[in-house]
Image (cartoon, rainbow, N blue to C red):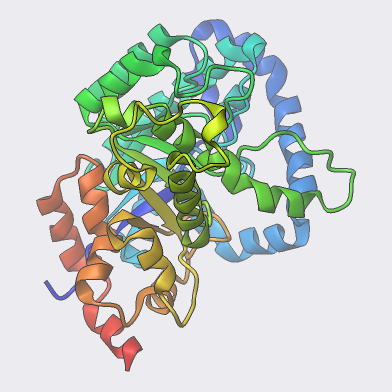
Length: 396
């Protein structure tokens, strides 16, 4: 085929907040009606604190109806065609496009025990809508179920089973664990076992972080320096907790972490700590449940969603992570992503690399992670995929 198959590892989809009502269990609708106006206002205020109004308002105006692809099936499929993307992994959203699930069950979920029932209600509402949305274009949409995993194992298992039966391809778990049992705790073993059995990958996405005092100077810089730590904290728990030792076929992705520099550094650090140097020998056993180096578990069980890979003359960073670990993504419909200029950004990021390496990052790795119809996707790519000759010319 003279075109690349492209599977984006990072897309966001969700309804305008008021439209989630019909997907909620009836007993939560009165609470939803009471909260929705305040919740929308709070998100708008958080957006003003977190984002630049002039930048984002201009972005939305320039993007036009393309923004509605966050929930409109026809527009979404058209955008994918224009981007040359055959399929995409679909996460929930946060504040960026004002379409997050209710009751805080969004990409930045902060676990709060007193609101656990509400976060579960919001997650289930989103999962129901996501299953419907994926069925409108089932080959191309790789839907993920939100699982607020820290509260109740039986609820986790029930929702994962529901997700599998309704065509969703993986789960999104909270990255923030403080105050709850971390993912190295044995209580999560039934969940890992079920996900491994169902061949459903665990997915973590950046966004969540502890609350910051937005009135203080420099807090955005603090967040930008720390968010990758909170995203990848589960990685340390899963590796050192022996989860991958006991569940060797469990698949995990970490998306939008600045992976081109963060992951090689983390892997080097974990390998050093696992080697029990003199400086850590006094701290007790922390490696007897590991049969490999942490970096070897990474190479077997973990993939990195590198959204909108950077434009740079050197491609060393992709190889530092490992070409067979990188999942390329557009981050549609976020302004920091590649849309609506995806092809030139693809070429700037990957042009000149060997065809086999580009193919792996564009789709080959994603086919290993998610349960997809490769034949049907290749048929779509033959129609809309980016021409391979474009990437050869970029190297000249």
